[in-house]
Image (cartoon, rainbow, N blue to C red; front, side, top):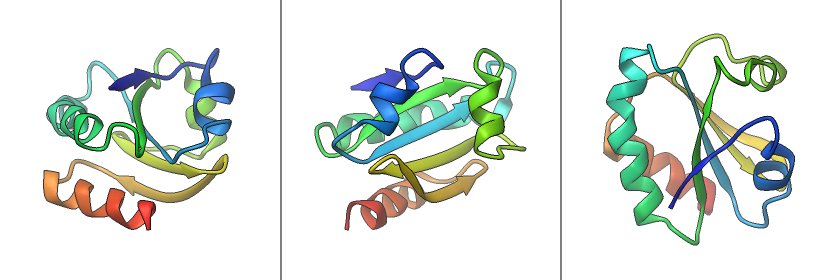
Length: 106
């Protein structure tokens, strides 16, 4: 299941999550973000129940992007216990994103 994170639900869904969370910070106009869409959706399905995967539109919720120092998109923030434990910037292969998720789950 792929989540839609917003300023309204970020505290509960991301920071308060009892499982790790992958937040894909994107914008609708961003080409590399569009390329990553199917990859992120695939990871959401593959790791359903093990890691919460979702997207946050930086145009709609820029304050959250600012809070975490996001200067380029797509940016992938991995949260555990309400803290960022891993960050990745830019488009990547399915295998690379999969490897990052596995690293976070360890």
